[in-house]
Amino acid sequence: MEMNMSFSHDMGDEYEKFIRRMNPPRVVIDNEACKNATVIRVDCANEHGILLEVVQILTDLNLIINKAYISADGNWFMDVFNVTDQDGNKITDEGILDYITKSLGPESCFTSAMRSVGVKQTMDHTEIELTGSDRPGLLSELSAVLKHLKCNVVNAEVWTHNTRAAAVIQVTDEETGTSITNLERLSRIKELLCNVLKGSNKSSLAKTIVSHSVTHTDRRLHQMMFADRDYEQTGDDVLEDRQRPNVDVVNWYDKDYSVVTIRCKDRPKLLFDTVCTLTDMGYVVFHAKIDTEGPQSYQEYYIRHVDGSPVKSDAERQRVTQCLEAAIKRRVSEGLKLELCTTDRVGLLSDVTRIFRENSLTVSRAEVTTKDGKAVNTFYVRDASGYPVDAKTIEFIRQVIGQTILKVKGSPEDVKSVSQESPTRFLFGGLFKSRSFVNFSLVRSYS
Image (tube, rainbow, N blue to C red; front, side, top):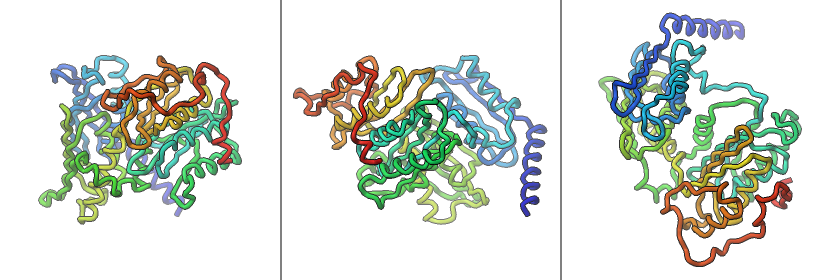
């Protein structure tokens, strides 16, 4: 049986290769067809997940998709994307244009449409996945434990939504700068991080996974929060009805499709988030129209489940609606945006988030990246008590960390200006002026 299954799988791969050789993907990039956008046309053999792959490649280049027309009914996939850069300009960089052509065109070397969203092995770092209940100061506690365990955070992405938190953190060994392979040490890391996630409520659900595999981080975060059922409504959701995306699912019985329409405020990576969710829920997009010019986005999908059926029940319809709403809201950045840019070092994330926590700020989302010895971290912070962020507190934190190192990127309405002195102060004013740091008692409580 095992040999037969293996043989069947190999035959499937060979058939995919044959189809691609006979029908190689075609990519046309046109900067003349549209006045204010670059038009990208992609034609290729149709496979489940191909739409997500194309959208992911464009999104990972930080391109803004203003319009899209998608048709994948039958054996052929045809779509058109109108894209711009972050500033609303056409794409003229030859390096980017060449990358798009090679990634989506006949030169792309893959046997599966999911190659760029699959799993690959790396020995450069160890990847840690965390899910659990959100609470103020959680990122500070997690990063303090990692520092205590001599793990250097090289990349991380943290999302919070609907009282849940998920994080994908890539770490290296403090001494060697490579991945951590000692099984006993990995087990210890998992144990202590899981204790932090549970907090004082030892019965709460928390999950920690440590591996040397690398997935597409954004897609993995969606999968983790979906598995953690963050889409289920809570009492807090009722208060946000005005901000809730308008998601509608109806059946078109003549054509055996379910039609999903989404109206919401536009933002970067919105199309990726919705296509990723539909794909991971097992739905196939046969046709779609996307129009995201202006402040509002309109998306219309004609879908069926992978088994060929449209949405079958009210319960399934409600689940699709809730999951798409959650996918849209997970990346909505609530709070004041702070950007930190400085020389990277072990414990940097722990020290920065500790300062936030001691000044009553909680992190609702974070992106941590390091490259060539430089750390570029983006934090979205809120007052832990739910009040607007105090401008005096932000100014004090910037003085402690360094005004040229930490900059405010959010809008002025996210900050509350007050005349009185902020009551929150602590004694480590010269912390970032010195490269020597102390060990904090916080981590001892988890060891």
